[in-house]
Length: 224
Length: 224
DNA sequence: TTAATAGTGTCTTTAAGACAGTATGTC
DNA sequence: GACATACTGTCTTAAAGACACTATTAA
Image (cartoon, rainbow over all chains, first blue to last red):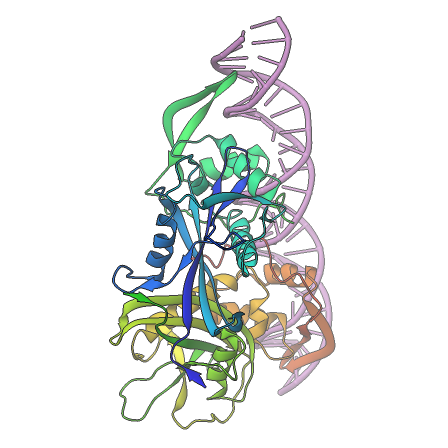
C-alpha cells in the first residue's frame, strides 16, 4: 500500500549546560505515564511556516528561554516505531544558553546526560534520539563555533574549554583554543573582565557579523 | 489546524560520473509535463522498512545499477512547496559507480551538472534540491572516503584526483591524495595495473574492512 | 628515444599540542 | 607574599602543499 501520508511528529532534543557542570536535556512527563519523554508534537499548519518552527514551538511549550541554535538531525521513518503503522519523526536538536528559570510546565525537567545518555530512561526510542543528537553535536563542536551557543552572552576562553570538558569529557589545550578563536573573527572583546580570586579573565561575546563559522580541522585531543 | 499527517514524498538526487567527465544527476520526464524532474515517490508501507528503502526504490524505477552510497540530506516541510497544503519532502542523495547502461524508462535521462546546477531546468524546486545535495556531497568528499564511491570497482590514485576535479573544479595535489589514502587502510592494491601509452598505474579497490572512513582535516586547496 | 603519466624526496607551511614561563588579580 | 587562574613564548608534531625529481610503460 502506497502512503501519501503517515503519522508525523517533530521531536526536539534541547541541550543546555547546567550549574552542576553537566549537559542536560529537556524532558517532560505526561500524567499517567511512567516515563519521561522529549518535547514532541505535530505540525500546526497555521502557526508553522517550516519544520523548524514546529521544533521551536515544542521548546516554547516548556520554557520561555529561546534557543540560540537549531539543527535538524535526522528524519526517521519506519513501520515499527509506532504501533499504529508507518510513522515519520523529524528530529531536531537545540542549544540554549545557561539559564535557571521557572519551567512553564510543572511536569517538565532538565535531565543530566551521564556517560553519553540521559540519566533516566526515556519513553519510546527517545533515549536513542538523544544519543543521535548528542553524537552530531559532539562532532560539530570540534570544528565550528558551536561551543559559543551553549555559553551566556559574555564568556571567557576558559568557558569554551569548559564546554569541551563537559560535552566531550576532554578538552583541547588552552593554547589551541586561544589560537583558533582569537585568530578567527568569532569573538569580540567586551572590555569587561570576570573577577575571581585570581587574575581576571577577559570577557568576550560572539561576533554576529562573523562568517568564519567553520574550521577546517578537528581537535585531535578530543577524538574518541 | 494541527496536522497528524501531510503529503510526504521522498526525493532522490542520484549522482554519477559520466564519460564526458561531468557529474550527472538522474532525472525523468512525465508525459505531458514540460520539465524534467527528480525521481520521487511515496512511502510504500509494504515494501519499505525505512525511508532509505523508499529512496532506493525511486532509483530502481529508472536503473538497474545499484547505488554505492546513500545519505539523507534534509527534510523540508512547509506550506508553499505544494499547492495542496502542507507537504513534507525527505531528500536523499545517492552515489553510483560509472556505468553506461540502458535506462529502464524511456523518459529518464542523466543530466550534466554545470556550474553547480543541473544543465537543464528542473520542475518544482528540484534544482534547489540538487544544489543542496551537491553542497553536502562537495563538503563530505573533502574529509571522507566518499570519492571512492563514485569510482568503479578498481581505480587508480589519479582517478581519485579526477573525482575532485570534476566535482569541485579543483583538486588537491597528488602528493596529498597519496599520503592520505595510502596511509589510511582504505585501499587494497589489486596487483593489477591500468595500461595506457605511459607508465601503468596501480589499481586499487576499496577495503571493505576499513573503519577509517573519516579524516580529520579538509583539503585547503579545494576550499571555495 | 620520446612523450606521457605514475610515483618519490624533500622542503615549506599551517595549525594543533606540549610545556614552561610570565602576568595579574584576590586574599 | 602566596595562590590561583589567565595568558604568552617557543619548540614539536602531523598532515597538507609546492615542486623538482625519478620511474616505467607504449609507441
